Image 1 (tube, rainbow, N blue to C red):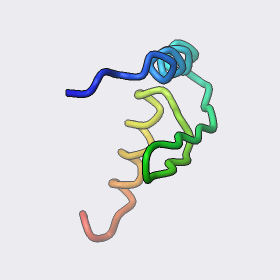
Image 2 (cartoon, rainbow, N blue to C red):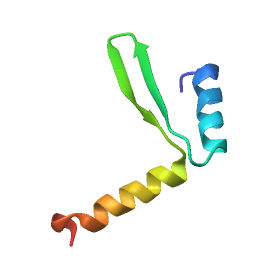
Image 3 (cartoon, helix red, strand yellow):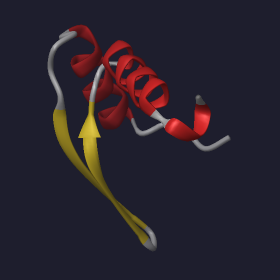
Length: 59
């Protein structure tokens, strides 16, 4: 397994400790650019649960 990037780990810990925050994040790696919002896990789980509950295909 690759060694985790310490800066990204620190940023994730910061966002996780502030339960209501989200942070825009762009990561550039060899051959890929990843852009999105970093949110606390609890917030992410709640949003996924809402999307799944509203999905007609999963009803």
